[in-house]
Amino acid sequence: MSETKQYLKEAEKYFMPSLMHQYYEDPILVDKTEMEYMYDAEGNKYLDCFSGILVTNSGHCNPEITEKVIEQTKEIQHVSTVFLTRPMVELGKKLSEIAPGNLQKTFFVNSGSEAIDGAVNLARIHTGRDNIVSLRHGYHGRTTTANALTGVGSWRFIKSDPAGIHYATNPYCYRCPLDKEFPECDFSCVDALEDTIREACAGRVAGILIETIQGVGGYVVPPEGYFKRIKEVAEKYDALLIIDEVQTGFGRTGKMFGIEHYDFEPDIVCMAKGIANGFPMGAYIATPEVADSFTAPSISTYGGNPVSSVATLANIEYIEENDLAKNAQEVGDYAQEKLKEIADKYEYVGEVRGKGLMLAIEVLKKGGKEKEPGSEEAVQLMENLKAEGVIAGKAGTYGSVVRFAPPLTINKEQMDVALEAMDKSLSKL
Image 1 (tube, rainbow, N blue to C red):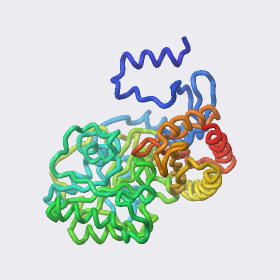
Image 2 (tube, helix red, strand yellow; image 1 turned 60 degrees about the vertical axis):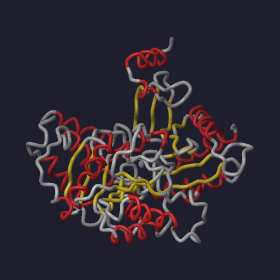
Image 3 (cartoon, rainbow, N blue to C red; image 1 turned 180 degrees about the vertical axis):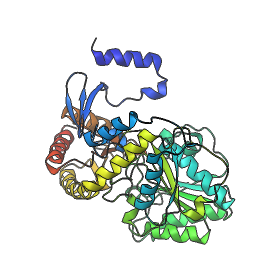
């Protein structure tokens, strides 16, 4: 029995079934990672175009970040937020400096799910209202509140709808749920969202929760002008705008935060994943007016951990000094253009979309009716890419979207390898 199969067998014995949703028919036992690459226990090398689910923005085991983390572990590893540490305070200041708009005050947590929970609680405290509107096909986490706000059925295990949570139509132009075309639709999806606020919430809403680009939903990119209309609706009903930047933050889309592509200032932003390049860290940041509503005593046992704070500071420094957001934009634009050229060769590729190094291909069923989702084809495409030495991700409401999200350190030569692998993999479907 191979080492991989041995560990798989042990995992099945000791893990809950929910943790056993592994990629690939023959799962990978990861043995080593290095910047843009992963190595398995059998010695195979893979170009990682998924970044540990959009986390290792500065590359796996980045030596500059790792060295600073090692030094911090020798000084303070944990004290909790009831004591101040230099790294935590310095990180709060840094997040205020790089966050869009007037966002200034941070609450530290451990994950994106916790950040969403905290942001929703803050919106309810500030407004004195309970209703939260999120989008269909949106994903926000696995804690009770975050999962209840998730609009992707396959990832939503909450069996009932908690009071005060409502879902609105998302801006999925390729598969418009309202069967309209942009721009002739004049943002009918936003009109539908307003209708949800007016009717389901009786006009009383604490916040509107939106991912800048829907991640698990399939890298759904809103059309130009969408967020402007959302802002108008929010102001009309005095609702806070909560932006989920867990996947789009820290240079991924070509800017430090994805929402910076739009002329839009949120009231609260949630962040995690790429924030610390792989170390446990999450946070939500708000404007002073909103943040100062949260006066009840609260602590975060592991939030703001000094080791994770140093990792976050080092990660942000590396992103800024190496202009990784610009690299994401340039390599991402290059890759998207090439992917569209490749896609034109295959009738079972429905759409190529994304921003920066957050790219997706929507796969259709071969020989099926128009736009029929190719869920099985997407799984096979993933297997084909793996055989070519490239790791990608899978997403979408129908499991028919293959996503490319490599470390932001990737160069055009490495991306060409991934693109050639994609072409070969599509040709073998």
